[in-house]
Length: 165
Image (cartoon, rainbow, N blue to C red; front, side, top):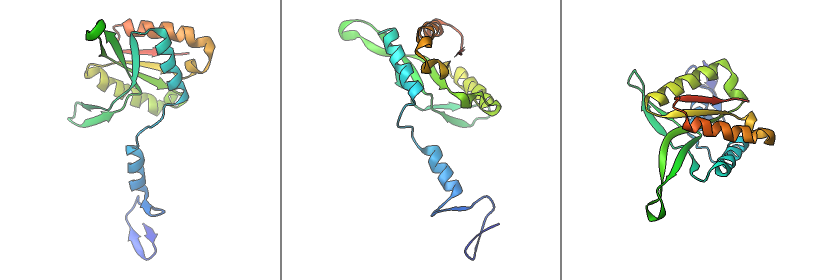
């Protein structure tokens, strides 16, 4: 047991300033991502250059129920939209394709398992997922390759597509 002065604290709770560690962890988990990473910004530019019929939008929270009946909130990096129609009837339509930009962190065994679990939930909910290796966005040499692979992935019928360096 930890001590806060003369008061006993329950196990697993330690003081961090005026806030307990568990409360701080909860607040961090609820924090919204306000800014895209550099690989995410580069990917958005590439998609805009690739084709004026597709657009990447910041992914909105998706509520999904798993096999045990638990609800999960999943926040994808991006969601693809497609331009449909002409003139006054033109509109952006959801494609059901989600895009994740995966950095080095995603190569760890634990994160791979989490990603597989998450992809399973998303595909059961009817989404398709494209994973893009962040390394491909860092070097201009790969940009043509990445555009071609993205076009293939969009037109593919596969539920999960990985674009690796």
